[in-house]
Amino acid sequence: MPKIERRWIADNDITAVKLDSSDSSYVMSGFRAESLQVDGTVSMPGGWVSVASESDRSSFPDAMRIEGMVLFQKDTNVTWQLYDGTDNSKWTAIEIVAAGTLGVIGSTGVQGQTGLYGPTGLQGHTGVQGQTGIQGQTGIQYQTGLQGPTGLQGRTGVQGQTGVQGQTGVQGQTGVQGQTGLYGSTGIQGLIGIQGQTGLQGTQDVPYYGLGKPTLLNLETTAADLVGFCGGFSDGKYCYFVPYRGNNSIPPLDGKIARYDPRDSSVATLDLLAISTTLTGFNGGFTDGKYGYFVPRGVSGYTDPGHTVACVNLSDFSTVTSLDLGEYGFCGGFVAGNYGYFIPSWDSSNAKNLYRADLDNFTTVSSLQISPGSPGSAIAYKGGFTDGKYGYLVPYNDYGPSGGFSDEVARVSLDDFSTITRLNIGTGGFYGGFTDGKYGYFINQFFTRIDLNNFSVSGITSINLATVNASLTGFHGGFTDGRYAYLVPYENSVLARIDLTIFTATSDCVRTLDLVSFFGDASLKYFEYGFTDGKYGYLVPYGSPVNGKVVKFPLKFSGNL
Image (cartoon, rainbow, N blue to C red; front, top):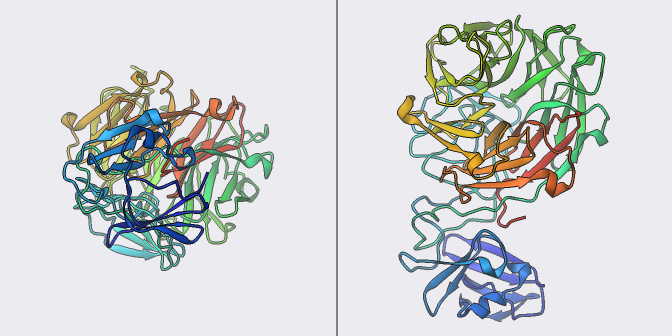
């Protein structure tokens, strides 16, 4: 079958279509064609190419059908779209509200494939002007993001020397710009943009993207002890996997960081445990663009219970400084302004305080007692996030007398680092969370969001994912690319992708992929958190038994598996 290559030209709304086969009978139907070329020879002029009958649509070659593609039937003025698959039974007629040149732009338009600035990448409805700017050595501009009418800008901006600008972006009603934005002086301009003169209005306001085909990256092929990780992050150039367990019996915790380069798939390592016996057993990490911060987890009864934060200079991947927090049992953290925040977890005998460290000197530390929350409670949190003004801690368990899971979210004012507002959000036992700038999301079977401008019971909505697929339970963490949420499987092996523009417990909103079935590998479960570098999503391997099998998948794929 011939291979098709598309080039969108946004300024005059025409499409160049080229086939690399001498067979000119295959036509990219339903698009306004500038010209059709076969092996470099123009074989037809520009204009509308129509598919007038079901038989014509059915004869469209398999190799050129992709999920979500659109065909225009000129004689009836009907648009057809391949929905939920690529076989011919999936063609669905779409009513055109106002006939035009088939521009794919609706109530929320499509422009640019660049967004998600910074390691936290937040820009929402209410902007917060930063007080102090920090210039870093390495800039990040993620590939996908949202810019809304009024955004949040963090108090401290980070500007790097080299940045990455992706090929295609999404501009929606609510945008994402990191309160710590990382810009580079050198970027990559994409070739693809879409704009129609009169678009489709309603539910098709943004293009649908199929779930991309995942691949496996086995870190154990680099070193046998690159296993048992707990969290990770990206600085826009490299991906970092946070060491926790390892396969060593003595000591029981590990400190070897794995750094993956997606450009050539190379893996480098840095053994923190070889630098200091206190640098071991971490639970999540984050970056301010120049340094990576590895959050101490620790386990009671071990030689070192895990008090110490490791700060790694990402530019040389060798210089390490440390900071003893004095308590053990933390789970994740985030950057806001010039502070790093470390979130308390585990049981009531361990960390009860939210710590923050001044990242300018990495010596000044202050703390705020978070747990107990409500009288008699002793809450362990599993991660958190920030909108630039507040920090939100994700409730997991209550180790107080009542016991059981906790649903009490703690919101901390980052301006005064003293005011705590608490909100019960209905279920409990959440494991990880994130924000898209407008909502905060809390992860478990009952996927829950809070309107950050309405931090009250009336601002809460929730969907029961198990009503779509009974295996959608027991997640450990998740992340967003701006439109979709990706929930990381732990107890089961099913990766879930939720369309945040729909947010309903329906198959239209929730797509799944069983990793064990797809790869034929029964060990592909028990992942501990995930992250994105702006182009790909990564599931971090912990495993049972521990392993180093990373699942990597493209975030915006214009087709299906």
